[in-house]
Image (cartoon, rainbow, N blue to C red):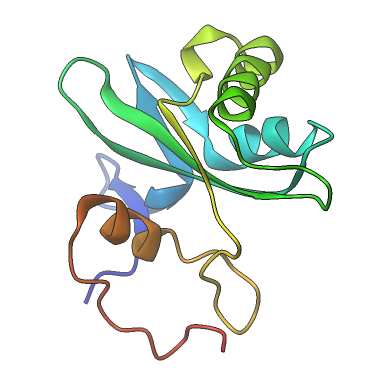
Length: 137
């Protein structure tokens, strides 16, 4: 069973909970929060909602892949995807510029409204999505 939580053990044997593994991306040695990337995307007028994940990258360690739901009146074009990549780079710095922006109609979420990042990662890599019993209908 994988909880998705990150922890460390100190020299006295105590466990320290660090946080969620899937909420931190390590890109070229920099630690970036998925929430920061998502917030930068949502600050663009075309974006209604966004999700960010990290996928393995040969050089950078992780590459940032994003999924974006657009506001009404916007169309998901390659030009808009590039504009969003540049926007994140301006807001957070070039290291945070997403490798890919994919436009979607909806994001996989639990019934409590949390984005199911493991499902997005599995889809991006063409892997089985695993248990979907908590997926919102």
